[in-house]
Image: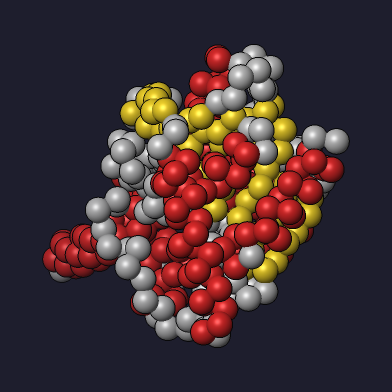
Length: 319
């Protein structure tokens, strides 16, 4: 009887383990595979904006796209390798005899073309501009999306690329959405030559944003699904969703950082920007665009956005 009970128990345990691994594999593939359809997002509690606000954003975005396309034609391409030997592609444009740089970091399932209008503005202000494609995005290689955590180490490689060409480089990181999280996660590493940060609508941690999306997209709780997925994610993608924390990295950051967020963000909850801000002990400021949704702050009012960004840079970072 004992032997039979052991066999039954082992079979049940194996079934539970197999089902759990299958669930975890599905959600890791859904969230972290560059070929999944996770960017085609429908949520249960979308925050609605007025038609007038959306028209303003749409009109400004169309103009920004044109600016970005014109700027992209001027850029040059380059390739580097990450610390784990993944090929990373990017584009850049330099001024003569200028040591000011910016690295512009795009969001989830996007690519560096979405940052070209940002590049045009920084270049106009006298900055050398570097626009990487994150791993598993655009023309860069990679099997799994880094969600900012793996990307922070890739940013260190891009910084090295700059410094190898300009030993006096002063670098500002500016990222949007997952790029904003990348900025905050990188901030905790206090890289040499990086003098300040602008993060736009980044999340508090990978765990938190996945838990939020499990609820909004699937009406599912974090436990046990996210716990199982986290274990699978460590095996497949190589990082822990809880350890991949903007908040914990910000606690170690020493350089100034500007936090930007949309007040009607239905993807990265607006509450997250205040948590990130409160965790930061370095010089900081916050700019919340109340009528903007996710990654819409610049497009709601480009002039005000850039005035805020460069006021912070010129008075808090380069002062």
